[in-house]
Length: 307
Image (cartoon, rainbow, N blue to C red; front, side, top):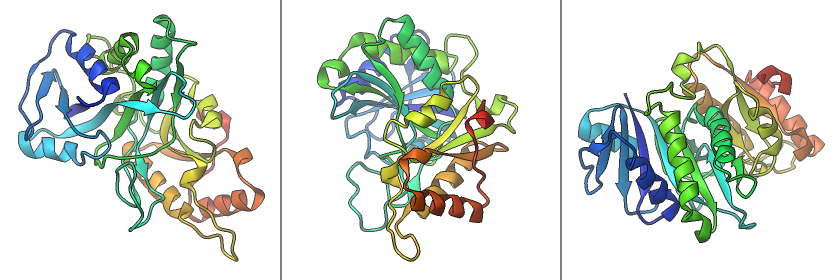
C-alpha cells in the first residue's frame, strides 16, 4: 500500500512544494508511468506530469497497473484561485456529485462522482495551521478548508493541498516549504508518527459530513478546528441544487447520497454524521434536507457530537 503524491510542472504552486519535498532526504527515482517521472521515499510515491492537475484522470489506477502497487491514498499539490486574490493555504476533498450526464465539466471529474475523501483532511488542516503559524505565514496567509469540488477522477481516498490565490503567492518559496513540511511530517517521512492515519485511529469514531454554507465552509470549519475531528465531504450550497416544486427537485439528493456513500467508504467502521449549516438554508430547503436524511437513515450531528 502506497501514498501517491501528484504534482504538475505547469503550475508553480504544485511544482514548488514538490521540489521542496524532493529536496528532503531519502528520495530516489522510481518507475515512469507512461511519460511521467516518479520518485520513491519509503511507502510514498511522487508523480510529476505536465498537464492540467484537474483533468489527468485515474492516476491511482494507472500507477497500480504499471507497478503492481496498491494506492492507498492520493494527495494532489495545486494552486488555488479566488476572486478575493487573498493569499491562502487550503485543503479539500474532490468531486462534482451534483452534476448530471451531459453537463459541462469545467474543472474535471465526471457526473455524479466524488472521490472518497482522504481521512487526513481534518488532521492535516490543523497541522497546516500550526506549520503556517510557526513559519510566520499567518495572518498574511489564511489557512482554510474548501468545499468538495473539481476533478480529476480517482478511486482512492483523495485530497488537494493548495497555495492561493495569485501568481505572486503561487511562487512563494516560504509557502511551498510549508506545504512540503506538511507532507513530510504528515506522512511520517522524517521518522515521526504519521498524522491522520484512520487505520490507527481505533475506528468507531464520528466523521463530519458537511452540508450547506459557502465555499470556505465556515460553520463546519469552526468544528473541524478542534483536535480529533474527522472530516468527510463538505457540500457547499452550490453543490445542492434545489428547485421549489410540489416535491423539491434538483440534484441535491444525488449529491448528498454520493457524498455520504464515499465518505463512509473512506472511514471503515466509522459513524458518518451530517452537520448542517442551518443558517444557509431557507426553511423549506432545510426541511427537505432533514427529511431526506431521515429517509436515508443518515444521522444529523450537533457540534458537540464531534468533539
